[in-house]
Image (cartoon, rainbow, N blue to C red):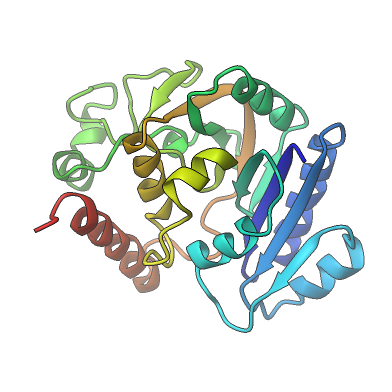
Amino acid sequence: MELSIIIVSYNVKDLLQQAISSLLVAAEDIKSEIFVVDNSSKDKSVEMVKNFFPQVNLIENAKNEGFSVANNQAIVKAKGKYILVINPDTITNKDTLSKTINFLNNREDVGCLGVRMLNGQGEFLPESKRGLPTPWVSFCKLSGLNRLFPKSKLFNSYYLGYINEFETAEVDVIAGAFMLLRASALKKVGLFDEDFFMYGEDIDLSYRLKLAGFKNYYFPETYITHFKGQSTRKFSFKYLQSFYGSMFIFVRKHFLKF
């Protein structure tokens, strides 16, 4: 099996249907399998998958287990040489899977790969490539210094503003919206840390891959469309609590070991 695709879904039925449809086209010539892990959706997402995509491996959770737990549920069942973790609010371009797999086949040192992401209006999403959120990097983002100096290596390492949108480059962090992972690397570093419920788990796994000697790469020769933020409203209390809570878990785990 070349590729295992994993989608964790929560109350985004229509987007999920669109995501699966695009992935089936992109994986047409690739020996692959698809897992959908549903986190107790109330919008009949499960029924939609059963009716329209009977070939999909469906895992139904009785409650919302969060992103890390749900992905791990599928990863332990996956048979692929590569594992793609991808959000349900995405459309995968037809050449994305073939191009990214070809890149990994030629680079054994790469543990994880991300691609250029565009929003629904076709605009580049800066989180396609990110640096490690050290205390200084996080301060620059929270204070707005990164927006004042968007191409500065000193002030905008969070979004790696000094790396061109179309430049293939080694990066620190791959976004959880599209993480193409080498299964053998996961066996070495472990799965997603289940202390992270939502947000931060992609940063943690990317960092652990680097610590183990693997490289993370931003690959802009193809793209996906990401209709971001559909499951959690930005700047809601739930979003702020989840996002900054996960950042605290990451900093405590890796930088405040005392």
